[in-house]
Length: 347
Ligand SMILES: [Mg+2]
Image (cartoon, rainbow, N blue to C red; front, side):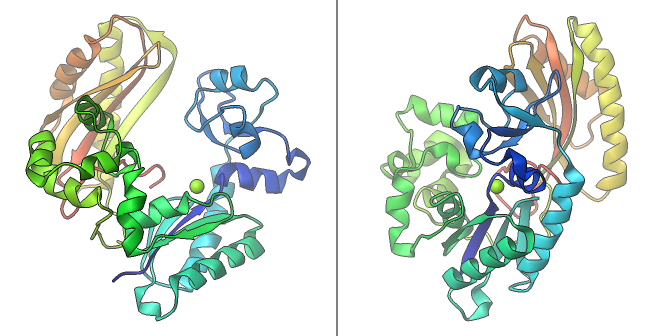
């Protein structure tokens, strides 16, 4: 049985900013979202009390919380803290898989100690060295550890024992399972499946009918079974390039012009940064003026501008609205992990 810890810093960017500006402690603070088109990266709990959330457009956050203080994003600062935190983690194990600047899985099976005690020590040491708080989940696998780290947030930790897995999963919305995107969730909802508990009521063959070849894995995941190992070097699942325009694009021709620029950058980047990866799919994302987002993808081992133009035309035709964001990307052939996972935010 593995011993996995999921460590997650509490409101990381906001916490770093508040440490640097103690005069703002106790006030609702958001990092990012201050510019015309910006979205919020992180906010503190005071802001969350007003319904402000990460990834929310700044103007909406301002509506919900008029006294919200917007701070500019300072990645250099957060990266420096992230490095200090990583160094602390490395004192405990080599098996660290960072998910972003403020989140990581650790496999401490080989330590011969209680994972619970290790998590406590790590959190205390982070607090001492950086002044920041972290939450931790302790469990026999990654799936459960990630659920557990959310349980006592902020500045807490929680363990899920193997025999508690079924019960914990039961109440969990299906969207919380890695690999279940909005489309799959929608399809499941049409069959009255909202939670992992609902999934547990279905047989393996029923699940396979619902989600195809992914059925067997989903059958295990909804029961809290997950045998993914902690990968010290996380493999990118996808690569993309997108742009939010300061003025909306009102015609398909305008979109095509921008698409050419984005595609050129993407293909150059791919050649430089991922020359050895095999491409599985090409994808175009369109965000309309009403903030709805749609994407169109196709299987395509060697994407080019023509492929992206075709995808754009299909995605663009879905809504008769001006376009505020365009993105182009690829999905790589997944060498060892079955479920589609969100691309890393900060690779
Ligand atoms: Mg976090």
